[in-house]
Amino acid sequence: MLTGLTLTEARAGLAARKFSARELAQAHLDAIGRLNTALNAYITVLPEADVLASADAADARYAAGTAGIMDGLPIGVKDLFCTKGVRTTAASKMLADFVPPYESTVTANLLSAGAVFLGKTNLDEFAMGSANINSAFGPATNPWKRKGDEATALVPGGSSGGSSAAVAAGMALAATGTDTGGSIRQPAAYCGIVGLKPTYGRCSRWGTIAFASSLDQAGPMTRSVADAGLMLEAMAGFDAKDSTSSNRPVPAFHKAVGKSVKGLRVGIPAEYRAPGLPAEIVAMWEQGIAWLKAAGCEVVDVSLPHTRYGLTTYYIIAPAECSSNLARYDGIRFGMRKDAPSLDGVYEATRAAGFGQEVRNRILMGTYVLSAGYYDAYYLKAQKVRTLIKRDFENAFENVDVLLTPTAPSAAFAQGENMDDPVQMYLNDIFTVPASMAGVPALSVPVGLNDAGLPLGLQVIGKHFDEETVLSIGGALEAAAGFTHTPSVHAGAGA
Image (tube, rainbow, N blue to C red; front, side, top):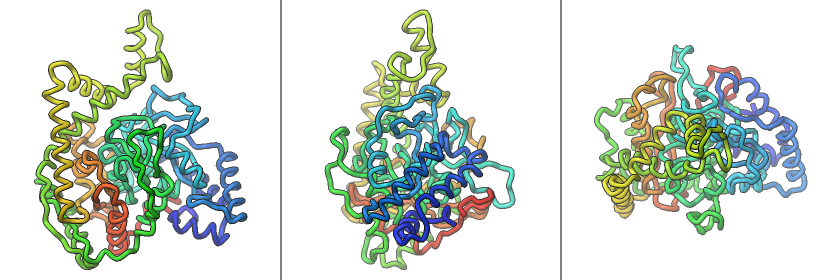
């Protein structure tokens, strides 16, 4: 079925005229119509006429021989990317009616490459969360179910949970995500898809609603490793409007998949063998190591001694930057406004009504660590530790080409579980945060199912701007695992 194709397969089918871009788009619109009420993966679905008009234009380019690398491929866009003329909410009441007059650089690049946008996918409000339960538009739901338990709804991971659910369920061939501390990789692992966080600066942040500016990075969420490379080619590139954007050339990333990995050195960080790590995660990790050894890789034990401070450091720096970035939502310039007798009253009423509990928690936390008397004790010290974390990776990469770790400490959990324990929720990102702190590329690859029939992922972490080696190793894991399972609890899901 057309909704079960990879980007690479769909692109080949369109080029060979086996089906049209209109047929491909219609199949995905039909899937959204069947499944989105249950999964809530999309906040906004674009009008059918607009989607099909974009598909028709792609068909014309294929007929003329001028098709781009994403031409005619229907994708979801995380509702954190500003899209000209299309509502962009950040899953918050604060921006519930915001329609940007401009296009983010990443989405503009995808449109230039011919992608067909289906709609805007759900997320944790302002990308703050690990389960997609903090959205003002309701939680997104994972299309997977535990074996023998059809009643329990599982989280799709966060913050890019709507994107991961849409791709896994066949409601998009791929989707954009953003990753601040694991928000592409962790939901990809929970939903059995591929998620790539590129090197910080590889994709422009311009036009992407900010959470933590020194950490936020856009990336692809796809059904195969080659697809992630293909989509990254379209998304990436220098942008003069973003001072943190890299001016490095964009390689043909998808061509890295399938290359021999023989002789590459794979580091296994001792610190990721956390106490109490579930046996199924350890077994999956050991299996991944065995697969890479069989492919000719050399496995090397390494140490990242400051890893244990990664989560703590992240939850000082990220809320501090969030506090500064979200100060602009004051009811005066744009977004929601609640009237009050005084200016201070407008600020207070607007922010109390517009922000959800988790966002308020992080703003308060960030304001505290930036306040007089605490700045040096918390924020400045956290920045110093972040430098040590980055140095750990640099030291490790003097001896190895990539690192291999689990993506998450568990499979997807049920909606409602852990919600009364914020520390437990934050621990979902324990394996993904360090790579974000260091700004290095990292890829989550689905490699199998646990005893409950839920997907598990392994994470490949690489050197700065060496996404190609990360993708090569990821492709080798994908080929060895042969992961082809799709969720089947909803009619047509992943078909």
